[in-house]
Picture 1: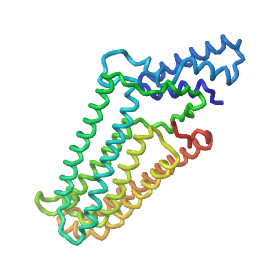
Picture 2: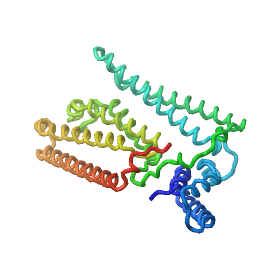
Picture 3: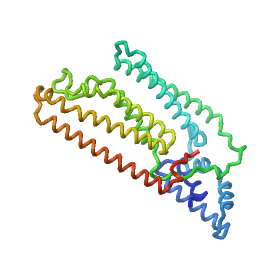
Amino acid sequence: MMTYIDRYVYDVGRRLPRKERDDVEAELKSNLQDTLDDRTKGQPTEEDEVALLKEFGPPEKVAASYRPASQYLIGPDLYPTFRTVAAIVVFAVTIGLLVSFVVGLIFNQGETIDIGSRLLDTLSNYFQAVLMGLGSVIVIFAIMQRLEVRPDDDDEEWDPNDLPEVVQDYNRMGRAESAVGLAVNLVFFILLNLFADRIGLIIIIGEEPLLNNIVQDNLFWLNAVLLAGVLLHAILFLQGHWHFYTRLFKLAIDVTWLFVIYNLVTALPAEQETLIAAGLPENLPTLLVGFGYFILIASGISIVVNTVKWLWNALQQPKLVYKLPE
């Protein structure tokens, strides 16, 4: 059974760097448990736990005490709020410019559009907007730090009942990992649209690549699944862990990837004559199809295994799967 102390230690630990988390959690839990046992003669009640945790204070202040004391541009008291605001700024700019780019394409379907040039302009505007937004946030919080402005949480008594439920390890998602996922999907989306007409088998530099028509036929689905990946990892970055609906969203993206791979593979046999005419070996289409089906089957097995593992863990700890940290 999860105790108040377990939830308190977890809430403190999730505010600390990963490399320090285990040691701090073990030390803090031991300290709290020993203090509680000494006071209650080894027979603590929930009321005793709540009273002890109130004495220790809010988790964010305890977490701040474990960080090294030094001169901060943005100190421990303000950093959690700064991180949230910065993430919201980046997320808003990303979604805003993506929507602007897609809407621009939709409303100009009847015109000749240089997607590559438009995407480069959007990318340039994106980095400028992100730098300006983050720069403004940093300046504001740095001024607040110098003026010693701190979150006003002393007027309302902190209540251990507000502690978040512990998120199991299988549901944790590091923000660095989600940021990498977001960046990878965004970069592939950009490259796909910049060089959509140059993706395929290149036999002679300067000539149109072979199999590019297959890429063009599936361009909509490729863009859709990459944009969905950007959105998924942006949500994970903000939340810090997996939730029920993000698991379902990830499953939908994976299944769509299978659909795209299937489309690519099944389109290859029709290109056999084109590949042979270009001087490629006669068995190359067969090899490509076999390799494509191998990827398709391996991906399908991986999706099934991960889904079963998730469902099993959810059934083992049902009450911890759907709870979002406050």
